[in-house]
Image (cartoon, rainbow, N blue to C red):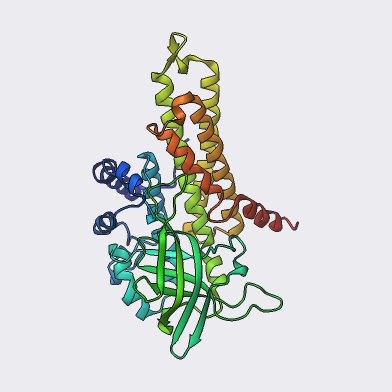
Length: 383
């Protein structure tokens, strides 16, 4: 089906990033996977290209482009090239909006130019060893002491934590209210060079190998009160504000990755022969890929509708949950079918489908598990 969500400017941007990926990323990507992270120099190159700061106002060195659709194009093209961009999507799609919406003018002057250029890479630290989806259980504390916050605690599974210069930490600044466990949380920006801050190494994962993921520890880390982002004790409300874009971002990548898996399978079945003829000649192969193509089309239409709604400021938390749930589950089904069509070769690391398979599993976990998405959706039904 013809997509109508993008215009000529998006198409021109797509051509630019496609050429950039093919020239600057594809040759180096295998090495990035081996080393477990994207080199900092890559982020500076993307910053020079103007990509990292697309949404940053021009007065702070950015492109002043409020539409999320350009970021969606970037994600689609990375998946098309069967690439991972490290923590770049978290930096752009998840962390940056908090700075844009809640930073003071002074904070914007201090941080946004570096965020746009790639000089200051960011991460957001919510998950703790004993606290996943239940943010109300966060134990990391930020105690006000004069004109400073003293931060103590541990965060884990932090995407971009190894390369991060600024970590947006969700910490408890006040006791929870008796009728609201989520009250009393604040957003504190911690610079990576603060004494007492430590990165516990790059965690080894089964997928998304080029994306650094770390455990972070805070031991009496002192940061000025000027590093409070937004209102004190209002972190949960601030986090809720950006959840639709975060979940839409994951859905965009899920559909694009499913399409990349299908394209890889189509190429493979045309070349691979069994019983004297190409695998593509078998009815089962054709039917499986027909199912995949139809599912991807449905997911794409859902994503495109959400992109339009989001640009108009109309994408609700419930609708974003529906999009993420449908598209990440779709990704799992499609990639699994496409690996099966590869037979034993699909299990070999040299074939891109194996990486697409392992990378796909986490999308049903991060950004809110499928079970959390179902909870949000069911509540909207009055259940």
